[in-house]
Amino acid sequence: MNLGISRDERDGWMVLAVLGDLEMGSAPDLKRAVIAALADGADALVIDLGAVGFIDSTGLGVLIGALRRCRANGAELQLVCAEPRLRELFASVDLDRVFELHVDVAAATGVAL
Amino acid sequence: MNLGISRDERDGWMVLAVLGDLEMGSAPDLKRAVIAALADGADALVIDLGAVGFIDSTGLGVLIGALRRCRANGAELQLVCAEPRLRELFASVDLDRVFELHVDVAAATGVAL
Amino acid sequence: MNPESMSPSSAKAGDVVLEIPARAEYLELVRAVVAAAAHVDAGIHDDRIEDLRLAVSEATTNAIRAHATLGSDNRIEVRSNVDGDRIEVEVADRGPGFDPESIPDLPDADDPSRLLWESGLGIPLMRQLTDESAWESDNEGSVVRLIVYTSSYLRK
Amino acid sequence: MNPESMSPSSAKAGDVVLEIPARAEYLELVRAVVAAAAHVDAGIHDDRIEDLRLAVSEATTNAIRAHATLGSDNRIEVRSNVDGDRIEVEVADRGPGFDPESIPDLPDADDPSRLLWESGLGIPLMRQLTDESAWESDNEGSVVRLIVYTSSYLRK
Ligand SMILES: Nc1ncnc2c1ncn2[C@@H]1O[C@H](COP(=O)(O)OP(=O)(O)O)[C@@H](O)[C@H]1O
Ligand SMILES: Nc1ncnc2c1ncn2[C@@H]1O[C@H](COP(=O)(O)OP(=O)(O)O)[C@@H](O)[C@H]1O
Image (cartoon, rainbow over all chains, first blue to last red; front, side):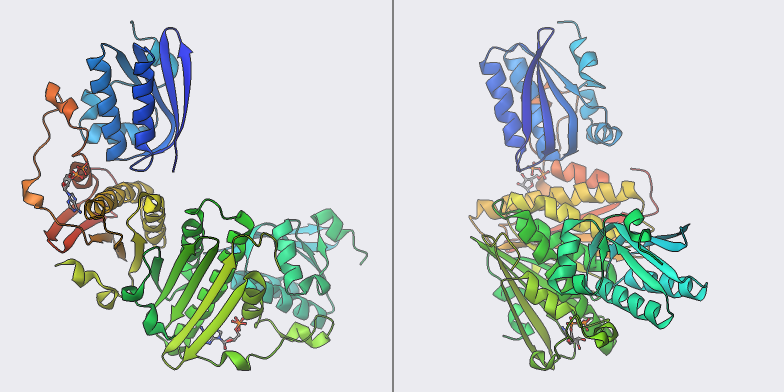
């Protein structure tokens, strides 16, 4: 299974919009997209999970790795995730304390840079 | 699995609109509905398969049985089935020569009584 | 081939095997698994998958009925193998068996007695929908093998 | 319990068993089968099925990885049993095995070193999502048993 990942600029943020299930088979696609965005000089990233229906531990792991990579590059990272079940999933392994989950892209890019 | 079957009068026809998959587990529901319609005195029946996604041999068998029962009661039977795959299915076992398949209820009830 | 030869130990590496209770509630699951197993190979045309889905559903319906005649809750095994341009599905039951050669032909569609045949459409449909179909049966059970070639886009 | 005890011969009458090649392409199929097997019992709350779906997906991901470390194309078995108000799923692999007791705890969410842990979330998640979870493992493989009670509507 492949993810669809589109890149978009918005108010100085690079938005990666993800479409599909984020799991073992597809999570590496997102990892590559984050690495590429940072290599292209992005210093403020949004990962938009609005069109993601399923995330497993591999998907969560890639998001943690993305945060680590962004911090190492001095870049910002914000997540968009409105779906209640997925928000609960982050909370169930305390990742709601690691990430702020925004309800839409406007809320995420509204964070002061 | 249960079928949804609704009954409706139209221009002297009793229309049985079927919703669901017509297979082993559900086909008996349609058989019962046909028997009940004839018992209630219907002399012109339309079975509308427009909201049926899947039909198997059990489903086709119930339709054959419905035609036999209607003829035995001197009642008319017309079928509505527009979906190309299902029309092909009837044709693949020559049932297009047993039933006329109408594209909508108006075409079926347009048949002269 | 008898149903024994379909036990998991003889499975090929790429097989997807589903074992279900012999109950009508599981038919939809069988159809979903066959479609999903076929979809793993992205090259397969949707129409062919639809054909196979219906053919396997027919085979499973017969298997469920066969168990019912024995009052048996023994399970049914559905094995799918996608290999290059061909999908092979075997449905194995532990029913009473039957003689595949002695299945009567249906009356012609123009014959009024055709309407007496509410059953007997399953095997003709399986033959129509697949490129190859074969039955083996003894008093320990039956196995149907259904094959579609993914390159045969159009129904026969 | 070892993986042997999960061979079809010991299956309970109501079991749905799925055997797949140890490849990521089949994860979605596993999730669909578990959900469908659970849905056959109409009384089960959708939220609990979702929880189980994810937990089983995690177990299967680990099983696929375990086979990959051996370079093995041996298959993985997922057995679902719905019984009254409880669904039990077992995922059995033929991987190298591991010591479930020695899995380290993750650093606290406030600990900066938490970000070094891109993996290790699977087992904590399975524990969170199910009412009971148990691992048995030896050098012939591992079995995870996951149970949800259908009456426990809310996540723990
Ligand atoms: N797996 C099976 N086990 C036992 N008998 C079978 C099996 N499959 C088919 N048969 C026999 O063959 C007959 C014809 O099957 P089929 O063409 O599918 O029509 P139907 O199932 O509607 O009768 C069945 O009625 C049954 O007697
Ligand atoms: N079925 C299994 N076979 C072998 N090792 C396993 C299995 N399940 C889990 N493990 C071991 O336990 C570790 C932790 O598993 P888990 O919490 O799911 O996180 P992750 O799979 O992301 O590492 C794995 O890295 C692996 O070493």
